[in-house]
Length: 441
Image (cartoon, rainbow, N blue to C red):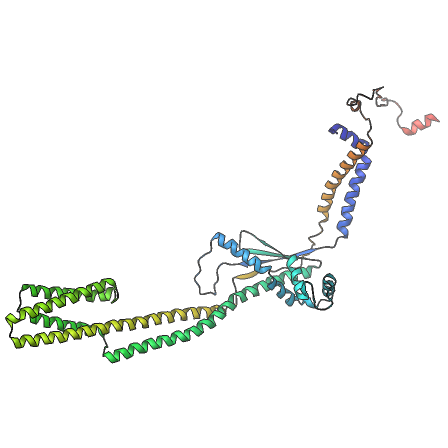
């Protein structure tokens, strides 16, 4: 059916067309008026990535992290824990009408049914109705529909409040547990620190070491002096060995301060000092016989050997002392870090606020959100026109009429007998039907 034929059919069947359109619009209007009104209350919640009450240093989140964080907040907001809290806060379990609906839907004669307890059923029902929308900002919009505007606002605000309480609990509960754990660990770490200090003090008393570095320098200087006395009468090679030993000893003291007694370079320098000291002693013993008497040489060599043994024992004691001092420093560092974490968790566990806040609480809406009568009428008008066109097309197809001469051109089996023109009255003809009836009498 082409456009011209369609318009011709519409002109011929315009009453059917108008009847279908009017019936569709009337039906949509009646249904819109009969439908129960639904009110939607909306609350706005701000989710801030910063936490002013936390002692943890957190950098600004990236865009992907922010989106993931907001999605996590949406999951918490629509979770069952928040829904249970809303049911408890609003005392929905005391509603007799809701309990009857629960028993009819689940077939539960008591307090539980196929879908769990009455409170669980209410929580699931609230979760299905609540709507949460996020935008490019950090604001979450929470909406809840209901037949009564006050109930819609109460449930929306109940979800917002329960969400804030849940976030506070999720923040303080883990830190409270961690605080108790760190408190228990701090007691043991404090005991370890005290034991390390006692071992260090006891070792210092046993060895008579008060200022280890100063005493070692004094004893080492005395050994070098004795070695110089033995080697003073020797040749230039012995003097060179004594000078090299003095330089190596000075470098060893510098490396002890710079690297510590366990550093590989320090150990290498210590081996060099021991080698120079041994060479100097051997040289002094060989060259001393030519310059000193046997008695003086024996006394100097004995004194040098005794001093060498004293320096060696002091060196061993310094190594053990360094280990004990390192244990004390390590225990002190571990204890200090544990105390910092303990204090941070204690402060976080006592927080009274979270990084989420209600910026726009829900208010009872003055106008219903559904049904939208004007929108429904507009849609029904469009639907009615389409339906009327379909009805006219089906009627025209089922009961084909010849309305124009062109309609017969496509059917060669039907001959055209005549074409009746449309009667047009004369310009000065009968003025109207009333005069025509009068003349026909």
